[in-house]
Length: 292
Ligand SMILES: Nc1nc2c(c(=O)[nH]1)N[C@@H](CN(C=O)c1ccc(C(=O)N[C@@H](CCC(=O)O)C(=O)O)cc1)CN2
Image (cartoon, rainbow, N blue to C red; front, side, top):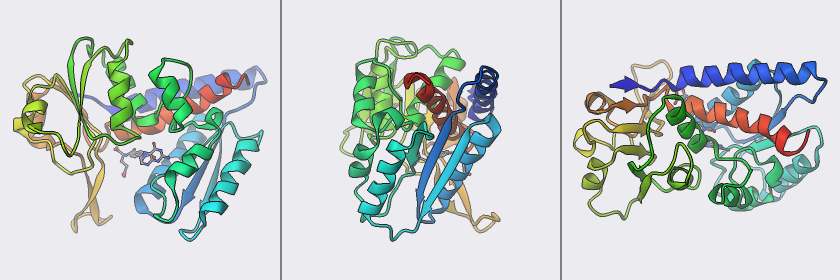
């Protein structure tokens, strides 16, 4: 069994990006500038956005953090999105999810200029992904593909089961792994809450991707001997013994599953850091796609 070290891989990518920035600087080209909108005080969202800003600093990107209270109206948020769409200095921006219930996430996503949508959530970018056209790939699925690539994991012809059909992970990763690309060319099953015989389905997967947000959901009996297991879950579970008051739990019962796998991602230190690395790759790509 080999542990897929997402933290280390993400660091490698960040070093590569820092070199690309240094070359751009030396050539007198513009430095990528990422803006992030954070609404409210959710602990996880604050951690993730903080990590995005820190990654920008380390790589040498410019960054701008824009914070709003939970009480911001949808109209006010849309105004800020439109402002960023028009701001020539900003190359790409994200709106951290989830948003408060009174704000329609879809409306906000649709308002983002697809050319600045470095999260890759806009329908134009999702359509480009389906058609293999240039655009931005969603960060977490792109991070998973990059891990499979960098660990030389064979995907062609493999039977892949993705558990969870969220718009930001499950749905796009299922499409990406089914494309005629490398990594890709899998026979993909997208499983969800209505799927029948889920245990059996998972137990036949060569590649199992768990993206359901249910701690320790994937048990030993659901994993085939020699499978590649990718755990996307990062649920904060209360734990009084921790200084933070919580511990992170993946969707996979790692302790009982790991030994059966050929490859497995841990939580933390697996897919999570790759989400941030992919966002940084997209931000650099924004410059290229927009001819800067
Ligand atoms: N606008 C977006 N919102 C959200 C996205 C996204 O891609 N764009 N994805 C998730 C959250 N997310 C990024 O924003 C994210 C999740 C987890 C990690 C990460 O590095 N996790 C670490 C542990 C960090 C911790 O201590 O909590 C790990 O797994 O090792 C990074 C980014 C939802 N919202």
